[in-house]
Image (cartoon, rainbow, N blue to C red):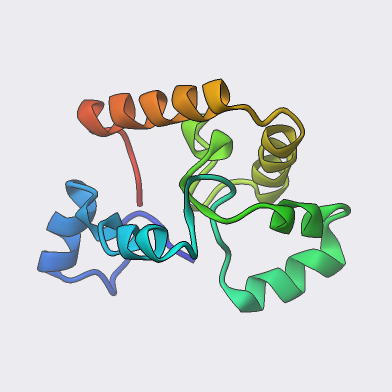
Length: 120
């Protein structure tokens, strides 16, 4: 799990995270069609196994492609935050998906990037 002040982060990694450049390689996954720009953020496989047993309706979030950004992230539920809240946001997004909602999420993401908001 990624947290602030992670001792494993190198000086280069710190700069990449500060400027959010660590997400740029994910655009290759979008280009290949493996990911979407907007959707539930992917989880590591070991967490998927754990969460599907612990959190009701968890697997419903896998009905959509994973995204670079999502409703949960634009509402502060990223990094070391409540998985239950992130899943709640993901399920809301899936139930209420629309092109205009995706546009809103992308706009909020760009604003957050320009503001320099937190991302671990």
